[in-house]
Image 1 (spheres, rainbow, N blue to C red):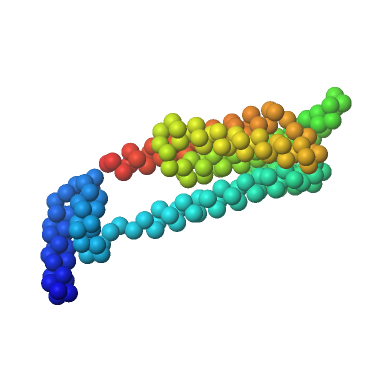
Image 2 (image 1 turned 30 degrees about the horizontal axis):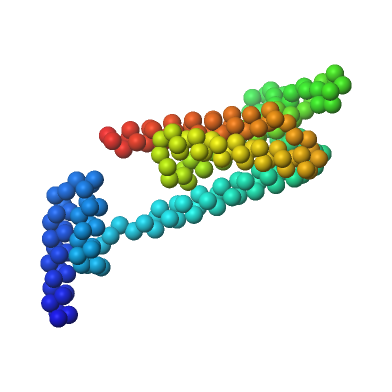
Length: 209
């Protein structure tokens, strides 16, 4: 019986190879499922390992991005300011070395509300917020399994919720919480989703050629 079963499996496998070469890509998975049901293990299937690994990797990256964003919000205003000032100094030094322009990223801003503008990294911090949430929204969109508008708006809503959570953390960290920062985070998420959709669209068009 084992000998006859082996012969039957081999016959099914050969027949599968013949059908597989004739069918278009969109129909292969149907025949593959039928033949595997008739003789389990006789036909090589396309493993889903890559898809699962991609999902796990994206989940880890999303978690790390959230930890980075929320972790920075737990820092004191002074510590966060020093980090931003240091980044601004490095960026100014790079631009000055490359293009000879001094203090390119230094902006004047009234931080204390006393009517006196001072050099600040305020806009660097806002740009960092936009970048962080652009990356977060792109990762969430890639991780979601839904399609079309639902995928887009779900990613946007989750990124906006993360922004609102970020502002809540800052409130309890005594750094102050501003509603407009949630809007800035949402704009960053929109930017990230726009870039991601553009890249995905171009890849689809390139794949059809």
